[in-house]
Image (cartoon, rainbow, N blue to C red; front, side, top):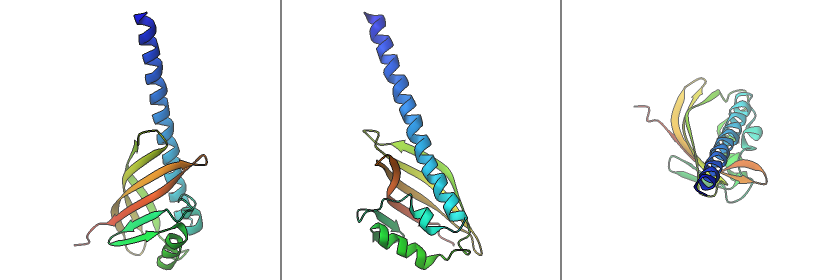
Length: 145
């Protein structure tokens, strides 16, 4: 009886680990698609990884933007295709939230171009309709001083 319980417990641990690994892989694939779209100058493609909802929130510095359309317009106003620079994400940490249908990501970004920007970000992603999408983005640039 004890052996059966231990075997069942081991199976639960293995399934839990595999699920965590799958979640991290799926989230990282979403981030990789963002970087690839950005680096080819495709803002619309970059925004494909964001939740297409008025519930999306984007916090940059002291500015809070709500909604996919408003966030997309903000990006298009600030960045022009062909002059967006090269984006890189580093120090990525993916953490599953309870239930396994959401995760938060901590990381750093570097945007190289005519001037280099660096900073940190926190994202909250949810699995919606089989896709991992950003539902909240908090990005902060480093103080240039």
